[in-house]
Figure 1 (cartoon, rainbow, N blue to C red):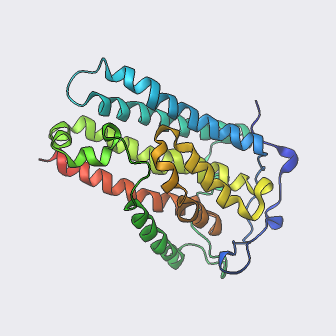
Figure 2: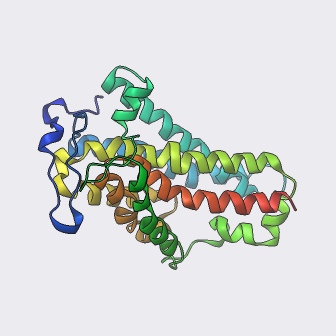
Length: 275
């Protein structure tokens, strides 16, 4: 099934903008095919569905046969990492079908893997990267908000790392640290962000217009069927991940903000491994 709607392809010059403080960049970029609502939801389902099945069906069954302590944690690490790698493969398949190539210049433009461009001055990179600061700080503050409903204890990875069981699980176990690093890499760089901010976001303005970033953020929140307690808090990601990526025409903005979380998790895991 084709996931691109050629008939709705819009040239970059016709892209709508948000007035005032939320004005979006009008810098010229290569025109990309625009997805219909059905195609957008199809890509969303291709990411959200496997993650939900892996979390709620595959992981518990795998935990029943895994040796050693904390079998559910082991199973979730393995299965969700596999689901995130699938998202990376999905992005490559869709870009290859759309663009006919996976060369770096093609991927860079097709997935907005360019330095951010100021919507006011047109300056690219350099000092523009400082725009990340408020979004990174905001993302950090959102992580401190209590989840409602609360995370089940058996699936609270942060709480697990802070527990004696987490310390015992990781102490000296570099193989599990490697799994965590791969999961983090595909979570915030090559998986979720590449799919939602790199693939979907640049192709949503044809259907959602100036509010494509908001629709993208809502889709991203609802994608968390594998951990539904995170959906309410994840709605803030509309502003903290999707909006800066859209405003500065760069998926690297969302990747950088989201990766702040990965750095903290990997650093905490490394401390436990070295104990």
